[in-house]
Image 1 (cartoon, one colour):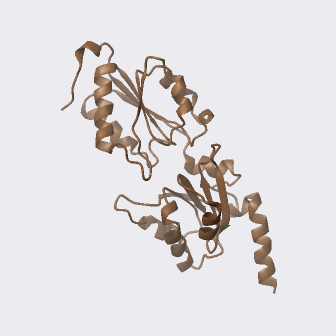
Image 2 (image 1 turned 60 degrees about the horizontal axis):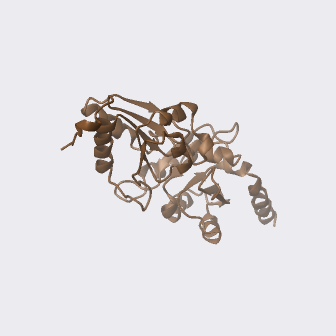
Image 3 (image 1 turned 90 degrees about the horizontal axis):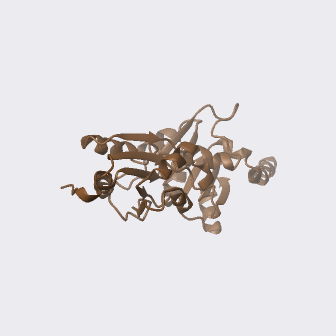
Length: 263
């Protein structure tokens, strides 16, 4: 049951889904900032840089709604209800989501829920961490001669298992970017080992584009140990593919394996 407080019901309800980008506050789009500047309410996720809330008007309510691995402060159903409640009672709701709303952000579910109440909604895309975070580390997801395509795969499905798509992706030559997969890293590397890809370059990047960023570089055979040594924590993404060999830190690893191969 949606409650409507008519004393606040001055503005027409509307919802804007805004992608906040990978973490660095400066990587939000200009259009995203303009939406925040007209917000009456901002519902924001855990992966959103809170500096962005400063763009919202002083009168706007800023409501944290969690939603990250290990931190489900609000269920998706609760977020949907809040979004509608606030729109009906206060006007313009900006739903601020990390990365891009439509890349494992459940953005379409929220868009569809708004439509079920006939509340106008629009989408302002964000820079997805799946491309930008590797890029900031000088790792292109495609590169002539190394990778002609890339996959973006969730590391953990709703049932808590490794995505079946990873088994398919591991058989290709494509760059594979795994989101929300750090706690499945050992399982993921085992999938690649079974495909004979133990020497495939891998990067694991924690909190990409932020001050907490850490980067672990290795190969499938070693990356679990490297991540443990560096104490990499979530949120982190995994990049598997020959393009990781372009990272400056990979050169010593290449030289090591060249020496082993020549002996």
